[in-house]
Length: 149
Image 1 (cartoon, rainbow, N blue to C red):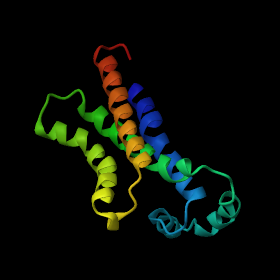
Image 2 (tube, rainbow, N blue to C red; image 1 turned 135 degrees about the horizontal axis):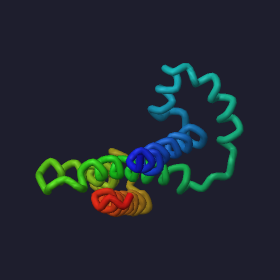
Image 3 (spheres, rainbow, N blue to C red; image 1 turned 135 degrees about the vertical axis):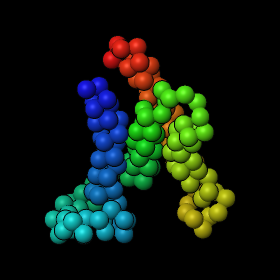
Image 4 (tube, rainbow, N blue to C red; image 1 turned 60 degrees about the vertical axis):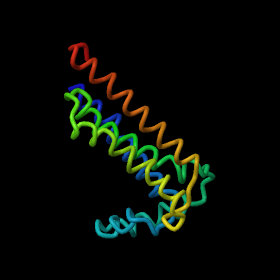
């Protein structure tokens, strides 16, 4: 029961919130809009986006927060699966993977500007999201293993 609640709050909710931010406030050239087209949602979304695209949403929420939320969700998912396991190469690889993909992609943009635009706020946000997810997951696992929650 507690694992299901953990997944809803720390994995599914951040993914849904990030997808909603992309859907309501970002340009329609992103991959998620191709998925919507395949699911036949694009006509319906046109009407919703006509009003939401004009809302005054901060650039942090519009551009940075979805990536941080997705790093948080990915790290939460993998950490809750692997934090309680004995130390191994696989455990370390999976726990570090969200950090390598999220903040690592931002560092790659710094080194190779053709991959995108480096933003230190994006980098810090993803690092903090990873640290938060790891810390929460570790605490929750500790509680689960002690039978308290």
